[in-house]
Length: 193
Image 1 (cartoon, rainbow, N blue to C red):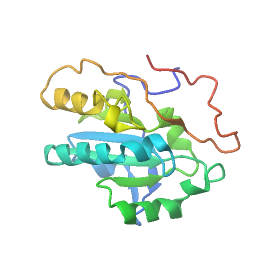
Image 2 (image 1 turned 90 degrees about the vertical axis):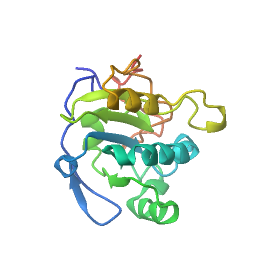
Image 3 (image 1 turned 60 degrees about the vertical axis):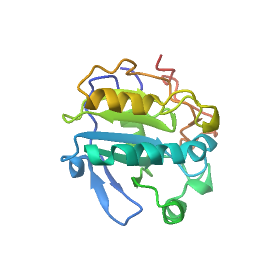
């Protein structure tokens, strides 16, 4: 089995606390036409460098039944900045237009096969995977980006078209796994394309 979800795989369920004080499961988003789940964190320069582009994408598709859910699976023992308390602070400071969930056990990151921060997964109305990988080609410095693959995938899917590039490699820091050195990745984790 591949480390990360493959196109047409169903979204694994989860039950995770969010910075808004609520707990969410996959079923909380049943009404969403499209669900974008992305693995993110507080400290990674690829995340912080592209947060505003992600905000613009969320706002662009908000009225079209697309829901965005960020999940932080990073070990706070590797980077203290990735703690739940810092997640709450970050959302209060930046008012990002997505839910921000905490995967302290890292079980959800394993189920989805999250490789990097950020790593985006787009699921259709049946919660089958239609796109996985990066949002943009230069997340650390968006002034240098030439393409927004996430936006293109969403536009094509919502128009009923086949997504021309359904798999890209996520660009960012690796997920910080509990009990491992900061740059460790599972042996079966590899580039997607």
